Image (cartoon, rainbow over all chains, first blue to last red; front, side):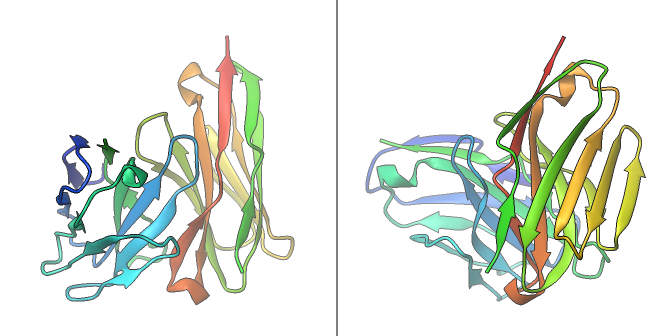
Length: 114
Length: 111
């Protein structure tokens, strides 16, 4: 079973608030990812990291930012939440040293912006 | 560019066999993955193919043909708990070795 954690699991917040979604993994994986998924829709990559101090934007334009100061930690921040940010946010990690580089997902954060 | 197609929905009966197809177009294929995702939950890894052929893992098997850009996931002896979405994902060399996910196939298993 994958050891990757996300908090909070559910968040309801007002427009304009700053929020940080937490993601941690204890598997020592070098790569980490953030996906956005609306109900019944496909996953879209919004940010990824190859290791400490490495962050890249994914294929879906996002107003969020990420940081990777420690290997195990990859938080995502929204400076000013808007209703359009309402979605599920999934964090994942993988090890580049493994042949398959299988991605393991956290339980997700469901965000509702009013 | 990247393009992954899967049927949107499928229905099957408990105890039956179902095959979920996935076709893809990619410029730098480096592996195909199948994930299971129950409603409201995170995807969980099912299988991985990088070479042509069939990979079997219990009730689940996955097949890959790189020349045809085609894969399928075969589920045998269907159980009610298999009702979920099944996501096909391709790892792209030209996309930083990241995954491109298909839209998913929602499978409903009926008694």
